[in-house]
Amino acid sequence: MQVSRARIFNAAHRIGTELRKIVQYDSDAPSMGAVDMTWKADALRDDALLSLYDEYRRTVLEPVIIRNDIRSGDLLVVSVMRDEIALAKEFLRHYRGAGVQRFAIIDNNSSDGTFDYLCRQPDVDVYRAATDFTTARKQAWLTMLVDLYRKEGQWFLHADADEHIVFDGLEFGLTFADLAAAMDRQGIRRARGCLVDMYAADDGQARDSENEFLPLQLAYPCFDGEGYREYHLTELIAREGGPRQRLFGAVSERFRPQLTKYPLFRPESGCVFVNPHFLWPYPGNFRSACFLGILHFKFLPDFERKVEKAVEEGNYWQDSLEYRCYQSVISQTGRLSLADKCTHVYQGPASLLRCQIIAPVPW
Image 1 (cartoon, rainbow, N blue to C red):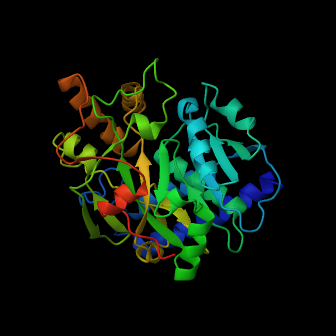
Image 2 (tube, one colour):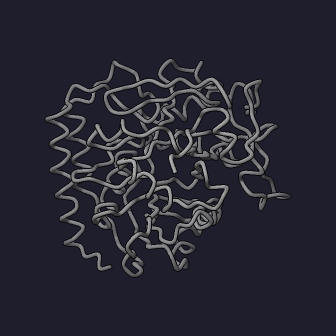
């Protein structure tokens, strides 16, 4: 596949046009920040969307290594990574094991070997984004990446480096391509998922120098099996709960982590990543049950270092509000202990089905 600068420019122009439609359609919608998804004081006004439009307009992706064209029927995993060498290998192993044969990954100024590692992978198209990370820029990069590969019938799966997505049937050898075909039969173009924060049974530091190669799902097998709340907003079917809300929610009333995502999708005309948690146009976000469990390995040994960096840079939503809440609790307690009476042990997708976190797939 040839990815010219002209093609990237055309993608940016199309995306900008779609964002202006959103301004006209939804200038008074409530703010949908990555953390505070229901706070009504901040509104998604014209100036905010125009600022987002500017991010898309200025987006520059450098194609580094582009493999052959995606074969018909191949699902493409897209991701953005920065300094994720500790997670990248297991990320690829998880999705390859689920039948994925092609990846397109944007590296954002990695300095820990992530970029070189990705370039050595025979099934990964590698792009580079040299500008500093912000949440809005990440959405711009992803939208442009999808636009470069979009064709009739093409399915995409978006996952961060710390997300291992599972579904009913995965344990029996069914693949993401099989799941996409099932969604097609149901007339669903966006499959809904729920972030499931995973943690260790002790203090969240299960991986150390002695067991650093222990698979994530064994090192961090615990999750909250109850305490979730689901409700409808203009943009998405929202869900709250989990250990982040339980442990850090008392720090700020605005700390309400949104767990819904739509990681598996077949883009329609005008599809845009407006936010880490949903796509535009919004009506497509209401047609799917929650079929995907997004195992979220956030509480790793380097968690405190990442918190300090995010607070220092202030490049996440609301000046890294989420990470400031983490920092506050860590400074008061000195350690993280996430285990609780609602803790369950993950033993495959069936564990999430039993807790009604995900729904059975209509195979």
